[in-house]
Structure formats: C-alpha cells, structure tokens
Length: 188
Image (tube, rainbow, N blue to C red; front, top):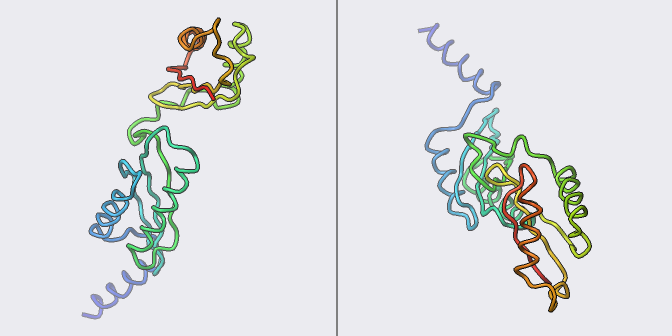
C-alpha cells in the first residue's frame, strides 16, 4: 500500500513538472470550435502541452489561399480568442495560417523566396519589354508553383493594347520560368 501511494504521488508530481498533452475530449472540442470560425477551411496539426496548470496550444488552420495577409491575421486572432475561451488555463496559442494542406508535404520547399522570385520575374519582364507598366506584383505559393498577380494602371488598356494581348504576353513570359504557374492581371 505504501508503494502504491508513493507511486501515485510521484506520478502526479512528475506530471506537474513534465509537459503532457490535454485530454482527448478537450482536443476534440478545440478542433470543433476552431473549425467553426468563419474563414477556417480546416484544422490540422493541433498539439497541446500542459505544464503544471498552464496549457499551450499550437495549431494549423487552412484558409482560402487568396486571402490578404491582414485577413489571415484577423482569422488567427479569432482562433486564439476562441481557443482560450474554450479551455480554462490556456495561456499561449500559436496559430499557423496555411493557404493549402501542408500536413503531408511542403510542395513549395524548393521554390525561390520572394526577393529571388521577383528578381527572376523582373529580369524576364525587362528582357521581354513588359516591365514598364506594372505597378505591383503579388506572389502566391500554391501547388508547388509560384502563381503571379500583376496589377497595372487602367490606362495600359488602349486601342493598340487589349486585355487579351497583355494577358497573352505576360503569360508567355511567365510560362518560360521554372517554378512559376498561372497568372492573373488586374487593372485599376
């Protein structure tokens, strides 16, 4: 009996000192409430740690891949708020916003980062005499490729340049670049 009591006390003390996870039903509840948040398409890689009475959580949420950074941030703030209201003693929530399911693979791993990708893109645009009119370029790392949004001034459209011609020229330039995918063109 003394050994049993010592074992139980020792086990309880160890759990207080060592990180452990929360109960499975609490994890399931977190998955559910986070999945109900507007803008969250799916929830994965949810991990929790319990150290003493404090709980911390790390979670990945998949969202629309074309959300703005600020909208993604607002969704992460909502995830943190909802998670903390769901679990007492949840003190730290780390939210990873994912534009696609990266649980199994990271298809963008070998793609150039933004500065290098823009350098490659701008060089190709310059060499093809397409660089003068572009106001802004937005990159989307999806499906193992870099998809490009071009933003051009409205006055680019004229009697000698149609939308289709501009789109065709930019598509031709980008198609030749390894690692790049689809393009979209916006005027305004």
